[in-house]
Every structure is written in C-alpha cells, then in structure tokens.
Amino acid sequence: MDNMLGFQGAIFDLDGTLLDSMHVWKEIDLEFLAKRGFDVPLGYSESLAGLSFRETAEYTIATFGLKENPDDIILEWNQMAIEAYRHKVRLKPHAKEYLFWLKERGIRLAVCTALSRKLYVPALQNNRIYELFDAFVSTDDVNRGKNFPDTYLLAANRLGLPPQECVVFEDILPAIQGALAANMKVYGVFDPASQHDREEIERITQGYLYDFREMMTEPPFTEP
Image 1 (cartoon, rainbow, N blue to C red):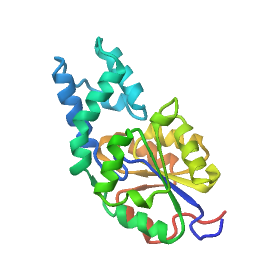
Image 2 (spheres, helix red, strand yellow; image 1 turned 135 degrees about the vertical axis):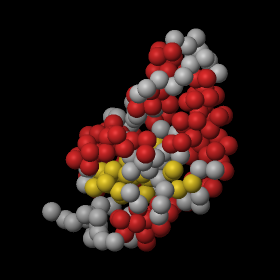
Image 3 (cartoon, rainbow, N blue to C red; image 1 turned 180 degrees about the vertical axis):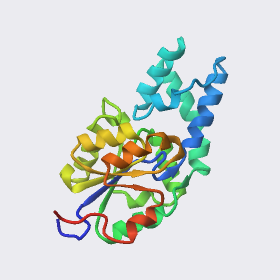
Image 4 (cartoon, rainbow, N blue to C red; image 1 turned 90 degrees about the vertical axis):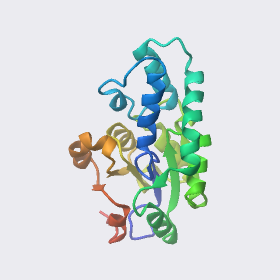
C-alpha cells in the first residue's frame, strides 16, 4: 500500500450510511402495508436488514400471505421511493467532504447498495457526488443479500483491488457481518434505525462513526 491510510479502496453503503434515507422506507412500509390492511409488525424492519430487494419482497409475501409476485412489489416500492430519492434524500453529516478527502488522497470509491439503479443514481446525482465513484454494485448484481460477502467482493473486483485493501462503511449489523466475511476492514455508521445493534457493531468493527468528520482528523488505519 502506498498511502498512509492503510487501504486503497473505500466501499460505501447508501441507505443509513451515506444517505439519510431510512425514514423513506419506514414511510413506504406503513403505506404499502396499510393499503393491504396490515400494520407494520414489531421487528419487521429489523428482519429485512441486509436483504436484497427481491429477498425483501419474498419475505413480505410470505409474512403477510400476499397473492402478489416479487417483481410487482419491487416495482411498486421503486415507484413510491423515486420522488424522494430524486429530490429529497440528503447526505449524512460531512459525507461529501469525506468522499472528496479520500479522492484527494487517491482512494478508489465504490457504492455497495441494496437499492436499484433507478433510485441510487438520482440520489447521488442530486447530491452531486455521483462522479466521485469508480464502481457501483447493487444486490441486483448478485444472487444473495448484503449479509453475505458477494456484493463486497464484486465491488472490490470492480475497483481492481484485493478485498484486504478495502474498507467498508455500513450501518446495519448483518451487512457488516457480510463485509467482514469478505475479509475487509469495516466501520460502523450510526443510524437511528440500527441503534439497537450498536453495542455489537462497535464490538466487531474498526470503529463507530456518528459523523464522517471523525475520519478526517487523523489516518483511520495504521500499517501493522
């Protein structure tokens, strides 16, 4: 490695990590299930953590006994979310500054998300950070959700880097476990939607961030 940071690539989740967007999905869950006569049950959102859109749709169908197919549900969710992701969703504190800080130091950047392209591209463009990224990976590109290492390994491959030279930023425990299984260093990022797992996230990660400014005060890693 030829920089003082100890990594060559940084891989970022979007919902709850770079983007302050988890509230959008809570509102969608409420509206989607209410139209079908259901309340959002306790633990439903937590059960979806790390799942791909398709896995989430299949879980929802099974949980509520819906007579719909996953593709139609995914389309409905995308249609419900697209306005927010095009115009309303904003970045977490100092996320943009940190991305520029990394680029100035020659770090390659990737997105690793469960969002479809039709959602993440407008959100990144609206916040003027799309052009900073060298690679994009969605769970649509693999067969398993982010609780497995597949998406992270693909992101490293698209960056042209070995996994051990990448660091991952994630907010939810199952996704963090997937990134660790990919042999990557991981930082947890605070989001209210995942604070119930904060202690375990802090235990297994390199650190736990409330603000990306924390990563710019000193090199985040040192060489062993």
